[in-house]
Image (cartoon, rainbow, N blue to C red; front, side, top):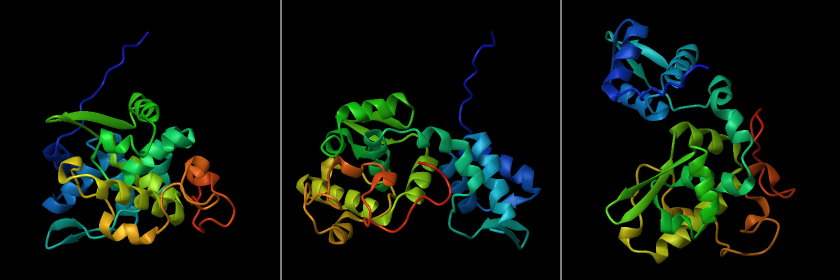
Length: 231
């Protein structure tokens, strides 16, 4: 029997060095940081993302320095690397991932007002979410940035808008100590206007556990479906 060997993620400097070796030239600091944040230092994801961006013409050389000047798009090849695990998620566990894909890190006490604690525990056990102590609080975040990228790409706008609306309502009730924002998409004060319905409103397109998974929405609720892969 072969022993399992867990490799440490690449550091930011190691990530930049690996990319520059592949490109055969210098990479600007902003682009290197973007690669590192998106891949979490995972060498396999890094190689595939670099390959995809080069094929898409999104990385170009300017005055001898390579630069990435395009927003991230989740390619089919990247989706295939992590999509299998996400496609098998139970709806309630998927809701944990989708909530954090909109706002992270998030205090566990706040998150558990929006999802069941047992589902958060399940997501952590599946290595989808990490929970760490920050001072007196437990903070939850996605274990890998690509989890959020893939879930956002697959979900309908109506579904995500409902999540953002519930987040905005909950965060509005707390104090500044309840949350630590770290570049998550959407600002709660603005997002609240996107979903005027209160939590627990009418069935069908309303809030609740009836379609916690993007693929299980009632007919007519949202127009954007998963582009080409199962969830």
